[in-house]
Amino acid sequence: MTKPQVGVIQVTVGAVMISFAPVFAKVADVGPTMAGFYRMLFGGIFLVIILIARRESIWNGSRLFVLSLICGALFAADLAFWHRSINYVGPGLATLLANFQVFFVAAFGVILLRERLGWRLACAIPLAVAGLFLIVGFDFDQAEHGYKIGVLYGLITAVTYATFLLVFRKLRSTSESRSPFPAVAVISLSAAVLLAPIAAIQGESFSIPDSISVLVLVVYGLVGQVLGWVFISSGIRKIESSKVGLILLLQPTLAFVWDILFFGRVTTAVEVAGAVLAFGAIYLGAVSHTGQRQSGR
Image 1 (cartoon, rainbow, N blue to C red):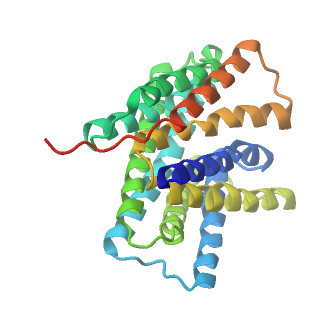
Image 2 (cartoon, one colour; image 1 turned 90 degrees about the horizontal axis):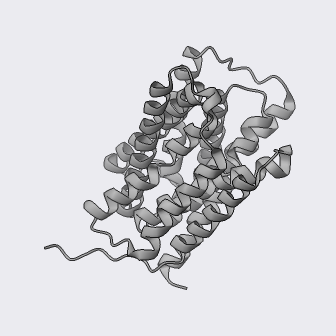
């Protein structure tokens, strides 16, 4: 199995794991930003424990540490803007806008990294987003007040998420260490530090109301942050950035499936068709030949 194929599998496994994020957030009886805060906090604590057990240092040099802090800030900003977009335009359109990251990441890869998309990947990206559109819809009934502001916040979410992915890929590509744990630990803890005041400003309580919510949030940190992003971190350096952005569209698509399976979500034929289209497009792009960087000319 080639290195790009291994990278695709690793990023796919990671995307599947973080797709459970809405499930954990829905079950835990805390606010949306607070769910993100505890995900980062508990995930960061797990990662520090792993580093101690493995006798690894969280410090891998000032350059990589700064890049990790930047990633943490971008991840926190992504969550903050996304939640604000949801308030104005609803979860459907906000999710769709946030996942425009795939276009920003692909454009960056082609223009600046000189990656060749290939016809399969070039077709798969808009098809996957179209499938996502059919799934989430446009929530017009929730988009009457502050519609333009909500759309703007959604697009800012896409930009911050795309920037995070690109900086994260740069971080992992330049790191001499094969271990993803130090970088993901710094990202998790720094994001938690930044999300805490945001949640406080929004008036969300830091208290966790019951033991079930505590358990759910702990598992959320372990699965959604530690395992999910460690797999993504291990694979992201092996495949082109545009393919990473596409595979991560599995997260909202699978979240739709979990909503049906775990919470009895009522679905329409259009939504099911959208899920099938998204899965097919992501598969098409994932198995396409890895684009090679062009020679500088």
